[in-house]
View 1: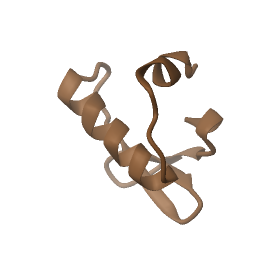
View 2: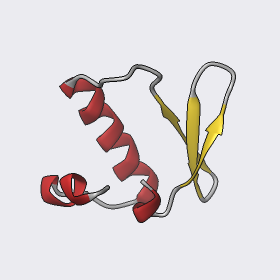
View 3: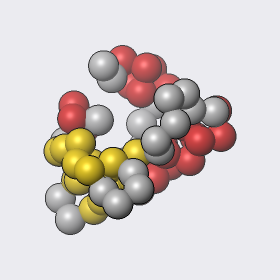
Length: 62
């Protein structure tokens, strides 16, 4: 996520979060994410950064 321009990992009341400009992205607290959870997070990230992320680009993030 930092490679996309997000800062953090910050502690919130229930969940950790990252920040992109003035936008906050909540990071789920479970150890493993389901496919629907990842899809939802990817859509939210795309909305925040204002562009689509390909599956290859998402996979390359480390």
